[in-house]
Length: 419
Ligand code: PLP
Image 1 (cartoon, helix red, strand yellow):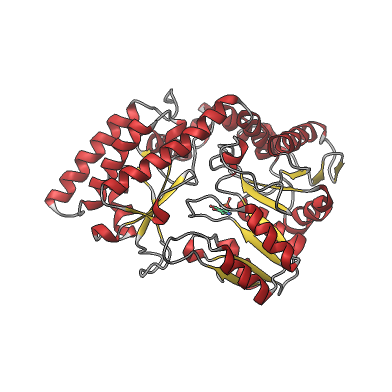
Image 2 (cartoon, rainbow, N blue to C red):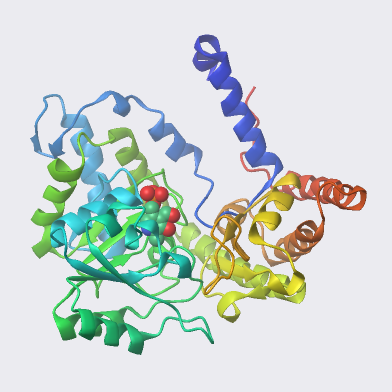
């Protein structure tokens, strides 16, 4: 870090300021986590210098002996942890992994059935703003209006009507478990490929806390930086029969040289995720999300689908007459970082939205448990009701900020502050 400070004090200052932001606030974005110093060390290593197009033992560059070892370890650990016949650890991100999965199984113009973005799906599940909706014919499935759960009968009906080439299970803002055998049955009925986008919850799968999609899907895509607590990146798991097509879809079809520092960091995270300590962590992540959801419900916010089985909860703010955008900005003013989120059948446009999404991965890594969740719920409930720009509202936000600082000081994000 001293080298960075000497060469580029502006960037060094930003790095420290971001560390400070993470340490002095509550990080409740469901897709974020706090990586270990070991993962950060691999990310900041000389492996970043190396070009390694291709795969271990079949590279287009010389000098790959060491990075080959890192990638082989990452692949072996991923296969062992998830019980997968094949793993590709090169995708730059979750979106890159999804692009490669489409490329391996679909042709432009093919029909793909996936969860509506507005109902909790991801941009790569058929949004017109994304390659997936521009190059493929996307058919969306919603959640049921009454209980806000996935309606497998409706998905089956849509599958039979439209005969999509690929069906995607998985979401960005769905707090409940997904029935992978039910998706498998539907896919088999029409001969479709089943892709599970496990980006959000794969860390819970790694720990055995929720059921695994791996035995049921043709391809599982994931991100390594959410509950799994690794570096920012993506990964693909599959049965051996699809290995060649997926590997070619990642490189050379959609990517160039792999980020070998990130591949090494993925290996580190996978090793960490295989420990008993990680299983304890993942169990606590779910317990914390559940507690947070219940405590927020007690404070007047409505949990979408009635609660959560995972690491995240989606809260409808209409009962308290606040929009998602207002809530996000009020919380941010109080050093509580979360995101506004559309709720199913949201009457508001996405940039406003009626909900917020909260997640427990980061604060659980900090060592917080159910007791802290009830404190956090009360702080959120106060912040979202505090109108910015009014004397009372600003005073309340200042008071909440102080209590946030007290809480996080007891659970520092990184124990030692770097100078
Ligand atoms: N898939 C799902 C379900 C996601 O939630 C996300 C990101 O939040 C992605 C894919 C994309 O991951 P990335 O941001 O790494 O491209």
